[in-house]
Length: 86
Image (cartoon, rainbow, N blue to C red; front, top):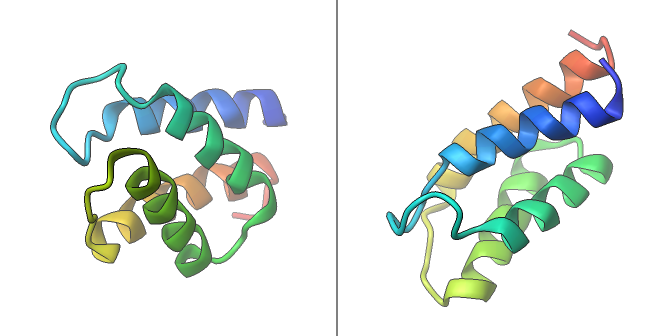
């Protein structure tokens, strides 16, 4: 799987994730930022912290790190599959 396919899968996953229950389509900027971070981060905790920072910065609403960890693991699974690590 190439980077483009990895990004598409990550975007679909993030579009389905609605941490503030405001509906799909509300997080386009945040999704782009998270996908960019996914390129450079390989540890779930680091990615989860960045996800929380990105979403909290935009919406000024706190997200439990556990919620961010769940999505971070899923995103890293997509990344590792793309790089044939798994």
